[in-house]
Image (cartoon, rainbow, N blue to C red; front, side, top):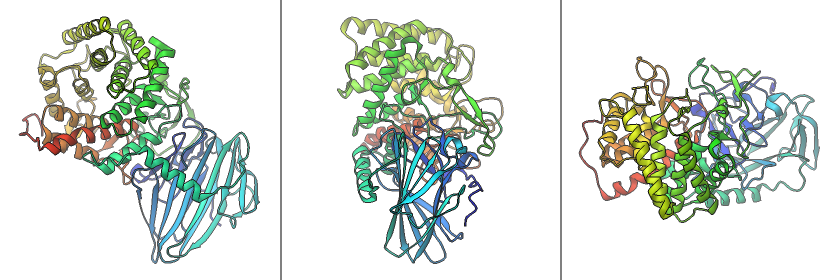
Length: 597
């Protein structure tokens, strides 16, 4: 019997796939193990924790240890197919979390298929709630279905009637699958009470396939249909029925080994939600994700007004304070849950919210509550402008240029789409006033925007406000900032946020994937379509084997860094892929600008 006391070894992040149902998600490693899954919600304790060195695992893989792994997503979905080639067989495991989902129930679907030869496959289940602390108890089998409990989590496992079990250890099931045949395994997790009724794999698969195809469009009208489809699916998979979208599915995956920059991203950031909503609006095919973002952001603003938090749980509650867990962690990092962002204030969130609401109004999908929230956001900008705040990168409190210009863009968009006649003039005047003061205090002698009133460095986030309408594309400040970013923050085609010190780019942190896509959008805005497309292609090359993106990319080692999958990166990819398409169709490709590499 397999030694289930050993925790599955961690792998490079590029080798993990991701499945999700909106209420929670799971990472699947190359050895077929579910290395991470929280239940019942995104920010709940994990039941599979081997990613961070804890107990708890669910693994399906060839019994033959000599195999080569691969995999791919089915179109327009987060249905993942792990694929292994052994000496004599080719076997695939089709994997998904069943959709549509409910908050109190998760269903893990696994369909083992032999593509060549008779495949012997081993499945191991070791459910461990509360980050691996609670062993399986009450393990029993009735009519071929196993039932068990771990802490407050009740589980049933169908399709593994012949599994072996010893007290205190995992369930282990082995099966031979003939060529062209398949075998279904269905794992149900519940809170409250044990499950009942049939676990019909065929019906669950049909409902899941249908739900994904309803949620994710073909994206043939983008420059990268396959990646745009996956981006849509990731955003949908990360978005709860409450409308809240988590920033990522994981916690404590390090930006840099032993640097202490390990964060819990299993919460809904207002800014990220706005990025996602605007990306979906830019494409326009499936506005439901935008509707979810509008509803969630509007409710938070109406509830908290000028005390808006940067992030919330997907249920709209406060993010808990950060604390450490006694787990080994992903190599190079401690394990933390909660996030110190709950103590911050970020002014740009109001500007992003106004842009989101304006985008919804352009599609004639703005609810009354969001129109009310827009006016609350304007009042909050008036109250907080010129005060210290944490900014987009959530560092120390300063008067950040990006935040003020984001509010300018939000006010201009809101004035055009949301304001009544008396308000329009007031909001535009406020935008002009903020822009004038920001120009006075935050424009460098060289003509580009500097990070803050007391920081002369260039920052790639300052590409974003002109794209959103804070300034014209041909404004000298816009052009100078774009040139400065290209000159100082681009290396080997990848874009960094800002220079942390005088060391070469990449020595202090990885390239920031969000910034790469925004540089492509900035080039597109300037009419530099060749450069924009080249930047887009270079940035999207920084994904994992599965096509997923993290927040950062180690250019030298070609490694993904930080939590996975990062929602705002996939949102930026989707928006860029959509916006670049019309220019590509028109053949509108201009000469290269000397400011670009």
